[in-house]
Each structure stands twice: as structure tokens, then as C-alpha cells.
Image 1 (tube, rainbow, N blue to C red):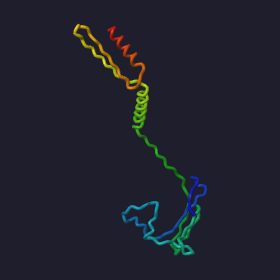
Image 2 (cartoon, one colour; image 1 turned 90 degrees about the vertical axis):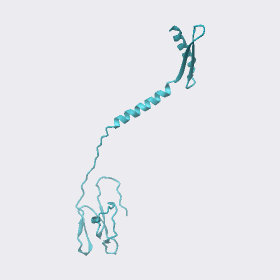
Image 3 (tube, one colour; image 1 turned 30 degrees about the horizontal axis):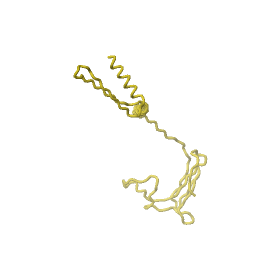
Image 4 (cartoon, rainbow, N blue to C red; image 1 turned 90 degrees about the horizontal axis):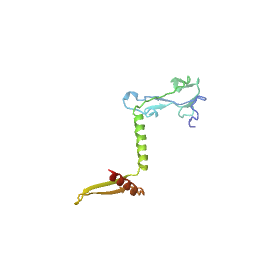
Length: 157
């Protein structure tokens, strides 16, 4: 059957083996896939039925190869873990920039933008005529009031 693991601990360790003999071609200088064995230049070890020799070994068990080629012993397992700790000094700046961008966007949604034009021209009779206009980017009912407040401030000055 297929080998699979449901738990990462070594509660029932088994080594699944298929036996071949021959050249792996590691001296050829060509890169190879470490997860797939190239058996094109190798011969299979056969079992009693003439099929590929396959066996599952538990720790301490031994597989004797045919034709006096030797044996393979599963001595045991060693548990290990790999950890990686990295630091990226620009992360804080990137986070700060993102927060500032979101805060600026949120503020722009609540600030009412408007434009105001003021023109002061001296008339022929020597009186200064002040003209005012305003444009809101959104429909604001306060724009006429704000123009009135600005006119009142200009009259006092």
C-alpha cells in the first residue's frame, strides 16, 4: 500500500525500501532530483516471486539483499527540528506608511472640500467692490453660510 503519516511524532516508525543496484550517475556532473531515483542505469533486486524487492523495516530490523550483495539495517531514528528566525528592518516603516495611507484616506472621506474665490476691484467712483464665489465638491448646505461668515469677516477688516 501507500505510505502516509497522520502524526509527526515517531510512534510507529517504518522505513519503506525498494532495492536497486548500479550507478546513480552522481559523478556525471548533471543535476538530479533528490526526490526521484533515476533507475535507468540500475538493476532491481528481486524477491522470491521475481518482483522488485520491497520491504518495510522497523528500527533494529535488517534486510538481506540477494546474491550476497550485503544487507541494510534500520539502526533507528533521530528526531530533529529546523527553525528559521529572520529580521527585516523595513517592516516597521512599511507598516507605518500603510497606516498613514489608510488614516489619510479615512480623513479625506470626512473632510468637506470646497473652493472659494474672492475678487476685489476698485470701481470708477473709488469704492472697492468685493465679489465672492464658492464651489463645494459635494453638496453642502453649509457653503452659503460659510461664504456669509467670510463676507462678514472681510467687512470688519
